[in-house]
Structures are given as C-alpha cells and as structure tokens.
Length: 89
View 1: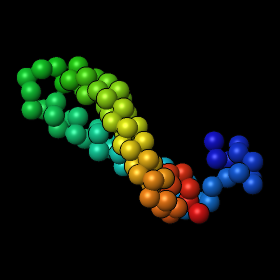
View 2 (view 1 turned 90 degrees about the vertical axis):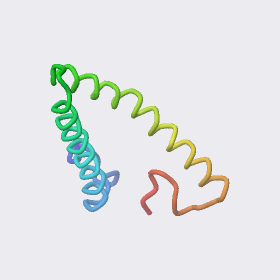
View 3 (view 1 turned 60 degrees about the vertical axis):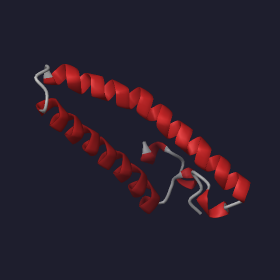
View 4 (view 1 turned 180 degrees about the vertical axis):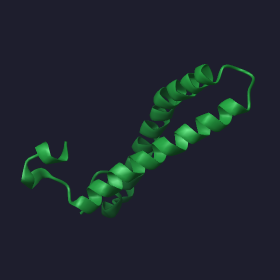
C-alpha cells in the first residue's frame, strides 16, 4: 500500500514504522493473551479464542474510539496543539 500512494502524500519511513509496529505489537499481545487464556479453561480453545477475538474487535474498538474522542475533546478544550491525533508534525 505504501508504494501505491503518491510520493508527496506518503508518510516518512519513521512514522510508517511506528504505526505498523504498534499494530503488530498489539496483535501479538492479543494473540498470546488469547492462547494463554484458552489453556486455563476446559472449554474448546478455538471457540474461546473466537469469542475473545470478537469481543476485542467489537467492545475493544468501541472503548478505543470512546477513549480517542474523550482525549481529543480534552486536547481541543485545553488547546494542546502537540497532542492532536494524526498530526505528526
């Protein structure tokens, strides 16, 4: 995807790396947490993994969205220009 974007619209490599690495680290954390939790129960590990994934993809995303909205509101109210989401400078 990065190389299909026009040259003038691409993010610098450092910012691209930070964005993709935080997504990879989050995915690894969720994966290993789900594997660990599935070993603690007598239930079918695959169905428990699926339930955890669905909860993370729905409720987790809702909580993240709400958190971003609350923080963005606070940043706008206090006029902290260096903390605006998506603005890397």
